Amino acid sequence: MARWGSIDVTQLRAFARALGKLSGPEMDRLCINCSKALAGRLLALVIPKTPVGKYPPGSGKKGGTLRRGWGAKSAGAAAGYANSLSVMKAGNIYTVEIRNPVEYASYVEFGHRTVNGGWSEGRYMLTISEERLKTIAPAVLESMVLKKLREACDV
Image (tube, rainbow, N blue to C red; front, top):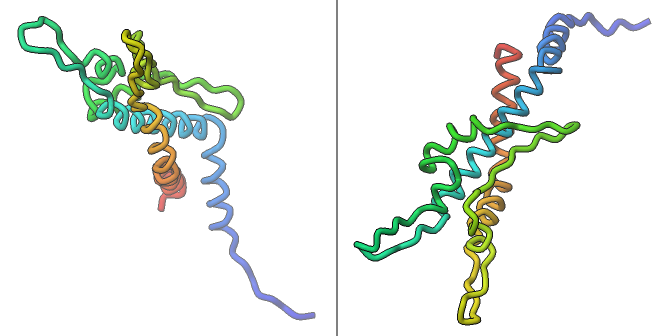
């Protein structure tokens, strides 16, 4: 009978143990961190796109209520704010709710009728930001997962 050679499977077993570490709570933590990272990216995209009202000097009005409604002070602070958001898990789906509580936010987003019977076009700041996030999300998630795999395998 022919002999094929010998195999050293110690590295394969070590790799299997490393992957075993990523199951359960560690995988759950990774998914939560990924969800918060994507929420931060979405906020960083939507805050600069949100329009700011312009008022004449001396009117006593200050614009920016809608932009401040996103919760983060600036696009740079979006990641910090996103880390404070709660992530809900239902089955295998992780959900982060990002909303703007300003009562007229949906009218600015999607448009509305004006007093004189005209139509004010929507700005679609959240819709456009969500579409942009869909294009960059795979790269963001891939880098986070690869980083976690490297940590687990001590590469």
